[in-house]
Length: 519
Image (cartoon, rainbow, N blue to C red):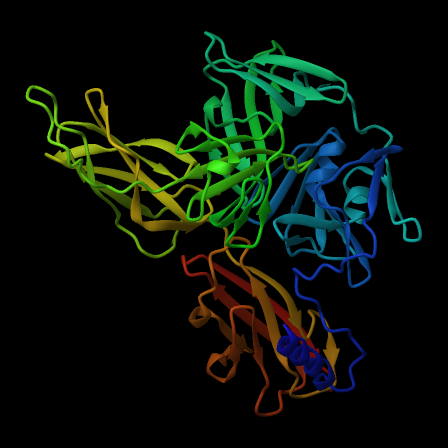
């Protein structure tokens, strides 16, 4: 980052005699406070997995944690965030300095940004959204939020405007084996058990990678945050299940901790559930090379589940079966039809070859299980999957499964992994800033960008236009920014800049802005 910082500093100088402007920070460069900043909602401390941060002198709060504390569920699609309030609707976008409340636009004093999988916004979001009083005491390192009609509640349920009930809290128990399955939700000192009928829509959202999928009760885990919407008659209409995850390959393992290749250290608690290839296991049974998904509560950060997968060699048994006994069921190979990242609407096939006449299925990590496959010719099974909206995975393993009668082959991993994303890149800070007037006739022009998921930027896709002219060939491009220094003076007046950037899956973002060169 040091060379990049030097470039930014140089760009500021090259703006000439325009007013002094601090070099914009990278969107992920939250300034770390000397001590953690606390939050109190209506006088009650709020425990957050991600504390507020300071960026260029502006305090930013974690939106989901604070809105949940105020009893308000939020939804996200791409960069758009929406919330339903007792007084109407709220809409905002990552990268924007505005919030829209009931179709009225309110300006913000800082941008809404994604940092390390958490969405942050300035305090003014709370004032604009529902008139809360929000103050920050820098000396005490404390944020005070006071709301007259919406407050943190110790109850699991709240009445909805127009009838019905919202039930929110943490899943403490699941009973999916009964004729009518139930979920028990706890919040504060109260709990409530709700019955889930077959027509209830269930959505599971990984808030880390912004991936939301239609799910079933089997996908919900104890410890997840839950928001259930009940109709007037008590029938459950929708269930939204929220969790955080970190996935990766184990790089080092001890009897009490794992170290993933991304550097994260994982330790289990007394209530942490550990499974290995869908079987209950202990942490000390996991080893280097295992692929794990660590699942935790998005509000408290409490680690609730470690799901581990271990590749089993697809080899035939060497022992000769006894006369009259069936031959062992085996998987010879599992392969994907794609080797590059793909995006929403694109499809891929999984081909499994093994014992003929069986029942085959495939799993996408431990995110989607038992996806169907059909036998196209004896011993060859093919499955198909189309990437839905809000689906983001990076190098996730895909497994094939095969059973013939009562004989089951070991679950076998495909040679390729799957990377897919429906979330386009984010274009962040640009310069000269939109609306800025500069005196320099050859100002340095740049834009910064990032990918909300781990799918990388396609550097060759990054393009820049200035006043309708493609100047990409004269720019410096990286996977983080593009910068351009005009070789000749630009004419005075309005300058229009367009930047385009795509990730390696083909998702594209475009940003247009203008600045003025003074006469």
